[in-house]
Image (cartoon, rainbow, N blue to C red):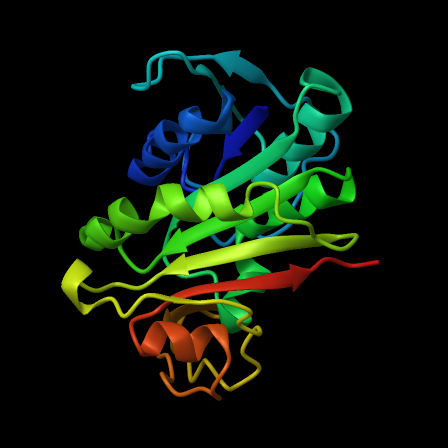
Amino acid sequence: MNILVTNDDGIDSVGIVKLAKAAKRFGNVFVVAPDGQRSCISHSMTYGKPIRISRCKFPVDGVDAFKSNGTPADIARVCFAGFLEGKIDVMLAGINDGYNISRDIQYSGTVAAAMEASLFGVHAIAFSQGSYEYGEVVDKYLDGLIEEYIDKPLGVNRIWNINFPACKSEDCKGIKRDCKVSTDTFYDDGYTEEIVKEGVYEYNIIPKRIWEAQKGSDLAAIIDNYISVGVVNNIG
């Protein structure tokens, strides 16, 4: 099996190294990831300038690694339409630093890369965790979840979405499967306003999350310290 690993946190992130190491158990691994931070870039794509892919050093032996000036969606599209065309069986995206649950899914570059893979008919799984600080939950469950979902069938234009809770290993209650994407109110954000000069205004977000959700949702699972596993539908 040939596996493409990417993310939106960049080639130097902790999560992509951990995911690439785990993926080596299941096949040949290619890492192609942004050359820097691309979080919250969603499904943005580059138009009007070239997308560059350059071989680079990577701290996992036996992995072909490349960095790119493109977005995560760019990387997926270029890989499947040219650079690695016909060579990839599965995409693993992540491990994202921060949850891809509820309304946050629409902003995620990591999820967007997996979505782009699905448009090319490539099986894709997106992985996220609440914080790299709580990596022991990932260490305990990651290999088993990859094994379970790396070839578990999906419908057309769908991806698996897996989130690890930000808790200690002993506090994780296990895995909640078949979680629906939460449609509960997840944001109560506000903004500060500053008048820089006449006609120029500057806004800074004051983030606030509402940690309440209906049972059976991805958000509810995370609140209760479960690993959330569910399907996210692409467009079309």
